[in-house]
Length: 138
Image (cartoon, rainbow, N blue to C red; front, top):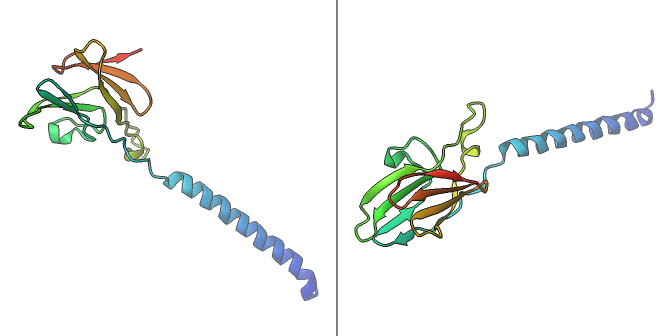
């Protein structure tokens, strides 16, 4: 076979190889995508307390990431209470940080006695200003 006859086959082989590499690179990019940064949720001051949504519960004795609210004295910063508002099930076969669900919004509820919380998935929760009665809202 002449060298000219081999060129089309070589070009087809190189083209197929490049297509395969491109597909694998795209799949790897999807798998390796990092989760976007957690929302920056400003603290909320109500009366003498400042309410915060920290990213992790560990420093407060809670073994979860996301879904945590803490209350501190507004004047001193002393911790009053820390609560889990919701839990997120973890699949041990998936990368942990991609499963975390953080609080996206922390506001005073219309009744003035609860905190209104919305997570990154749009689910709504409330918890009493005293840390009691965390519940999911419809």
